[in-house]
Picture 1 (spheres, rainbow, N blue to C red):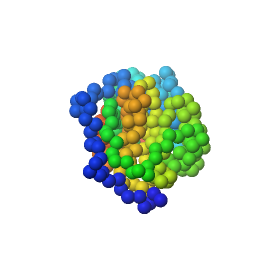
Picture 2 (picture 1 turned 90 degrees about the horizontal axis):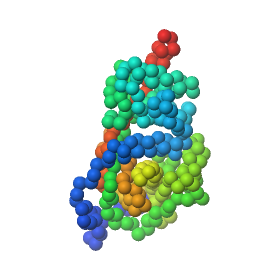
Picture 3 (picture 1 turned 180 degrees about the vertical axis):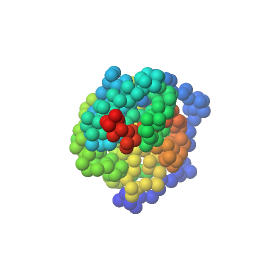
Picture 4 (picture 1 turned 120 degrees about the vertical axis):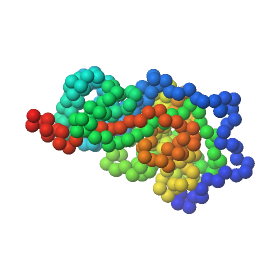
Length: 300
């Protein structure tokens, strides 16, 4: 059973963690502006994979993520490209707020310094009484570490439509998600598998599921998402192993860059990813209107 699994140990005969390939020690090329914008666009697609609806809205100057009743994390604007003048910012804030208020949601927007326009949008929002809630960091790599010593009982299973329900249940348990989300999550996963946009994996030890990972592909880039280990098998090296294997799978299928996101205050996860060659690309924050902002505007 997963609860009695020993930690992964590297024997003296294990291959080194560096592949030793020509050029392996060279500094990789940083993501281009185009690649950073593709990552930003793929963040919107990830919300759709979770079950939200998304659309690019020229009038709002942003991509709109909607899933009424699920709070700001799934009801907000992303990829914001607004005018730089304060009056223009205020007009777009009011349009966004009106759109989200219609379904009972507070207005929210993601701000990624260096990508979001205007560059000082966070200052505008702060002045309007908004506050930042989520604080995330995007990491990237163009290469993968060598696969650490494998537990001989481990099997990495590629998810297909028939096994998608099992994958969804395992992943939901790993991340402690509500069972009420299962139907919408499964439908989104099945659509993505059918469209060829998603590769998902279950890691098993002696047929017991120990972890999950998914690769979401988009125009030459791959997002590593949903990497997790079941509670009873954590702190045994499986997260590192699953991340390494999934990264190599992404690069082996022709994707020139792999990225993932992690909470900025999750020091342990950041250390693990950085040891595997992942580097910071950009940060983003989710800004939400203040509790009194909506009421003040409606009374004005």
